[in-house]
Image (cartoon, rainbow, N blue to C red):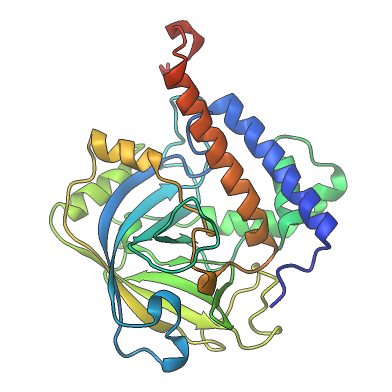
Length: 336
């Protein structure tokens, strides 16, 4: 299973371009916050229960035996901070994301910064918006006005996918389906995964609050549990289920979904300071994983270096600010 069609040199160059732009934007706007997905709609706790009747061939890694893992789930918007202290409104078009961190996961991990976790990252669309690290680098350059005409032309299909994703109407982020978009290993097999809620989103009156998605999560979990199926699709062949083109959907008729686990988020409170602080302190990475579930493809390979360095910069800045306090007027914490 190859990691990427790009040459090693091209992959590394594209990754460094993404990282340089991300670090610069992070430093300018919100050095101690996430560069991407900074606006959370809630960090909630729950459980991930592996099914006891899954096919033998899929009993790998965390799915090797029936077991229930505790988890943290984070719901968010993808857009970066507009300026320090000010997030983009939920009323604006955006990509909605879901991140899951399983706890008490034993086994050898790809990274050593977390010993007993397994992360899953998903967005609310079945395909990704770039094909590889070079496409991602071109998109990052375009976002800061550095892309040339050829690079902008290469992003035509990317802009179409982003337009489709961001045009989706979401009333409650607990009630929509999410997809990994990029492939991962399941032992010797290749898969994509999806998280599908038991209850379906039913948009009602047009929202007016800039934080209506958080409010929807809080209201829903004040009354009932949120339950999801964790599903996987298996690689069939390069034509129908390509590893190196996350912009091509793995169609359900070509590779039907197989349920491997049930996620349950009990009714709970999540909108309070201590939970917000924990939310901000956590990091979710595709490479927080057992070897058996390692990410595949150029986009995921770029994520490995970029995510690690972004988290390192964010935490280093926050720690420095605590160790060497600065005078108040050195920071613009007030959104006004």
